Image (tube, rainbow, N blue to C red; front, side):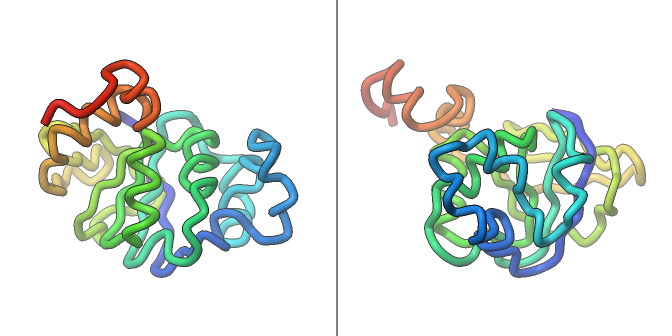
Length: 163
């Protein structure tokens, strides 16, 4: 995967991802996706392109367990989230919806840097700075879920898990 880094700080909550004033749009996800991360960066949705990455600090996705949060991030074109740490329920929701989450020290990545990610190897190359990072390998079962676009498509295709 290749794309541009959009850098965010610590404690980006599900309320930052989906501002509460747009809760009425939960039945209209394409419209809701037009407001993703609006309170953290009002220009994000107009600048993000398909394949780009969110790069964050600690505790990304904290707050309520809204599965809409990772879904609208994905719908906005983001291909993966890279963060120092992620709220557990957000992490699980993201994987279940087919949005990769890589956890490592993201301090060396700058806003706007061009990145190349190899999910299978758990490596991140910053093509702008020349630095390389390791996130650790994603477990094989999670890679298979991500390859199918999420848990539901995986179950529809295979019926159960081949662990």
